[in-house]
Length: 499
Image (cartoon, rainbow, N blue to C red; front, side, top):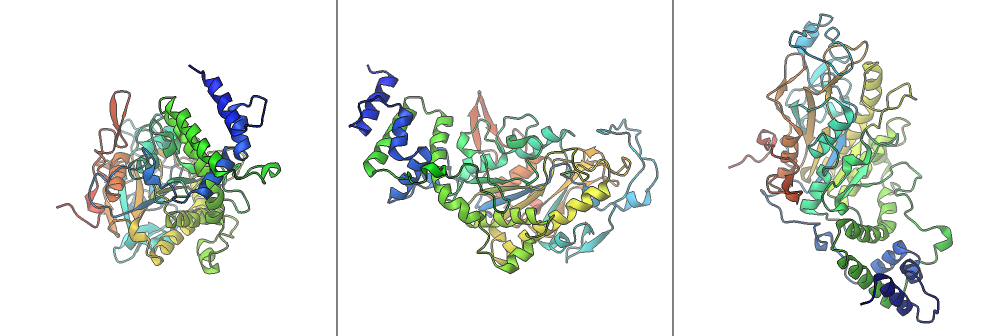
C-alpha cells in the first residue's frame, strides 16, 4: 500500500508530467496557481454555480423555534464597564443621598477600593420620547431613539474581573474556551452571504478588548464559526495578507482540470484524516480568502456612500470617526447578508494614555465617560437612524452591552467595578420599543430579581427563530448550549407575545 508521501509524489508528477524532479505537495499546489489563496480564487471564478453557506456541512441548521423576527444581529460591546447610573438607570434616591456614607452593613466588598460616599450621576437625567424613558445628558443622540429601544435594568454578572466577565457576556461562561454567541448563531443559522463570513468582528482601532480573540472564538464548535476580524481604519487593508505579494500577483489562475484535481486532492486529504474540523475550516478558509479578495475591499470602501450618510456617522471626526466608521461598516455588512456583526467600542486597558482606552473609569469618570459617551452616542444613534430609514431595523436586532456596571459610591473621582447591577439595551428585530424590564435597587447597586447573559442570549436566539434549549452541540459527554442549563426568553420586551 502506498504511503502518504508516495501518494503526494505520484500526484505531483501527474500535475506536472514533464518534471523529473520529485515535487512536494506544497510545490504542486503552487504550480497550480500561486498558492492556495490563488487556487481558491481561480476555483471561485471558474465555478458556474456558487457554493452557498447552506451547502457547507455544519454551517446551517433548520430553525428550532418560533418564526424569526430578526435575520441579523449587530452587537455593540462597550468593554471596561459602562456606568449604568450615569447613562440609562436614573436613581433619584442616589441624588438625595449625595455625599453621605454608602451603607456597607451587608459586608459589601468592592473590587479595587473601599466604598466612598454616595455619588449621583455626573450628568443630569431627563425624560425622552413618548415612552418617557430617562436618559442622561451624556447621550443626547440615543435619547432621541428611546421609543425604539428596550432596556434591561436588572443585569448581573458572576464576576467583577474584566476578562472573565467579557467571556461570560459573550459565551455564557467565565472560563475561556466556550463558543461565543456569534459562533453559536452562525452554527445554527449559517449566513446569507456567499462572499463574506457569517460572523464578522470590528474591533476598536486602539486595539483588541480584554481577553482578545477568545471573545469571538468558536470554542468546541467547528472552527469555521469563529468571528473574522475586519480592520476598519481608513486606507488600511481590511484583512492582513489578503492579497499575494507583488512578485506573485500574476499567478492567480490555473487550468480547469488542475483546479478540479486540486479539489479532489483536498477532499481526499480531509477524508483520510477523519474529518477534523480544523482542517475542514482551513480548506474553507482558503476558499473564503479568495472570495474576500473580491468582497472585502468593496464592503470596506465607503466612497459610494453619500456625504449625508458620512456626516451622519461623523466618520471624519478625529475622535468619533473611527467608531462611526465601525457602525457604518456594520450596516453595510448586514446589507450583504452577514448574520452577526460585533462592534467593540473600546480596547484593552493601557497606561500610556491620559484617558483610558475603554469605559473602565476608576480615576476620573467625568473625564473618561465624558470622552467615550459622545463616541458611542454618535455612532450608535446614527446606526439606528440609518437602519430605520432603510427599512432594515425591523429585521436587524441591535444589542448594546457591557461586561458589568459601576458602583454608586465614589472611588475618588471615579467608580469601581460593579458586577451586581448594570443595564443593556436592545432595538429592532422584534423588540418592543419604549419598554423596560427589571430594575436595580434605589441606589443602583444591585439588580432586583437578576437577569443574566443567559436570558439575553435566549431572547436573541428566540428573535432569530431559535429555541435556545434546542441549539446544542455534543462535547465531552455533554450536550452543550449557549445558555448552559439556564436562560429564559424575556417576552416582556418582544412585539409578539407568546400564545
